[in-house]
View (spheres, rainbow, N blue to C red):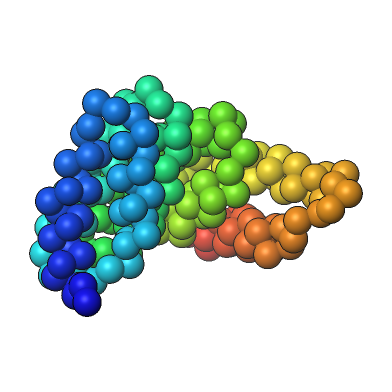
Length: 178
């Protein structure tokens, strides 16, 4: 049976180095693997910080869209670790603009959920993006509603729609009160 230490060692030894692999699919799979263990209680508290730093580099500079997409999703999921928020805080403006650009390039509900996590963690820092974010959230909501109307076999997007509306209201409330 594999223990927590074994998983952490596996991630540090074999998975994290693949975030810098010259092969795009390996970088993508490393992001996906790390996302599966993003809530892991790391004994080495520096490891989530190292991972987040590497994910940020992929988010910003990788030429492979699936790598950028999965690094964005994984970076948001790593925000549960104390040191990672501080790493991302310095680049939150760039981070939000990258998320918005990725949402235009892809149609990923998981990315939208990740953007919501980032918004929740960095409300103060995203003040200058409030109009752009609001515009994006409204357009995305309208697209989801239209998709539900048009689909012969609609997917249940009601919880995502509800979460987006809640995020939108939270953003407005935050800026009205501050």
